[in-house]
Amino acid sequence: MPKILLVEDNEMNRDMLSRRLEKRGYTVVLAVDGAAGIAQAKAEKPDLILMDMSLPVIDGWEATKQIRADAEIAATPIIALTAHAMSSDREKCLAAGCDDFDTKPVELPRLLAKIEEMLKKGRTPPV
Image 1 (cartoon, rainbow, N blue to C red):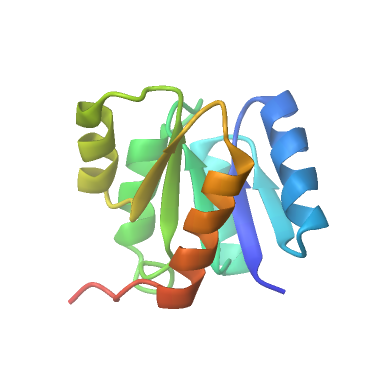
Image 2: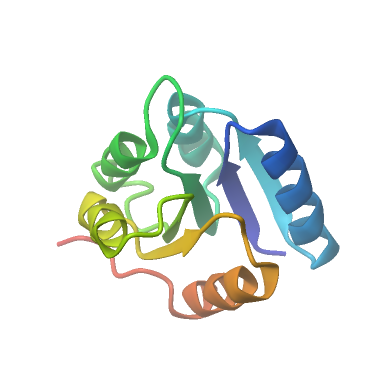
C-alpha cells in the first residue's frame, strides 16, 4: 500500500480527501500545518506528499523547500494543492520544489491520475 502524507489545515478537506484516498487503497498520514508536515515526512517516509500551499505555522512553499533540503526525504514526490489556479501559482509551486500541481476544489479522478503517475516514476534525487 503506498503511503501518502496529506498536509492540509482545513478539517473538511482533510477528512474528505483522506477517506477517498483510503477507499482506493492508500495509507494516509495527516499533518495540519507545514511544520507538522515536515516532521511527519521525516518520521513516516511517505511515498508521496500532497501539500496544501496555504498553511499555518510554515506555509507549503517553505515546507517543500525544507523537505527538499533534507537528504533523507528530498526525493519524495510532492504534489501542491492550492485554490490559486493562475499559471504563476503553478510556476511558484514548481520553483519551490513541488513535482506537480493541482487545484482546489480537488477533482478526484484528475488528482488520482497525477498520484498514480507520480508514484510510477518517483522523483530523481537532487544532485
